Image (cartoon, rainbow, N blue to C red; front, side, top):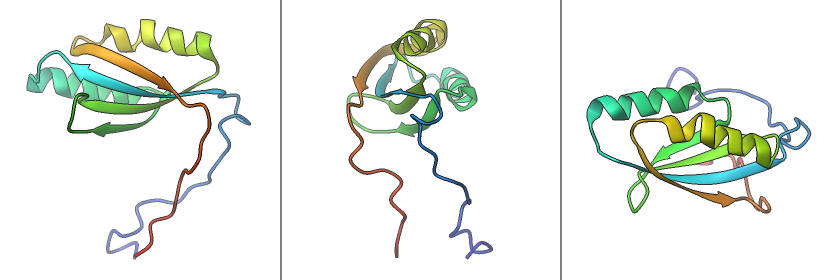
Length: 110
């Protein structure tokens, strides 16, 4: 299955709170324009961010959805002000704070 590309990776599932990451949010991002150079710049910045755990390009009102982990609300505010709001392609970012995780990391079965 590894050779066929079915298994993409191996890893451990760790508790964010046990790692000191007590703040989790989904951030809905809309870009100003869909200029290819700005999109590439946005994606590279998101890929390099340690706070962004997952990023999905989607249809609908938001162009991207980010799952963000930070130590606390102050750290998240710094992430917004020092990183996300400085990206040139960003038009709007809406935050939904995760209050409780119901289901995560469900293995894919065929």
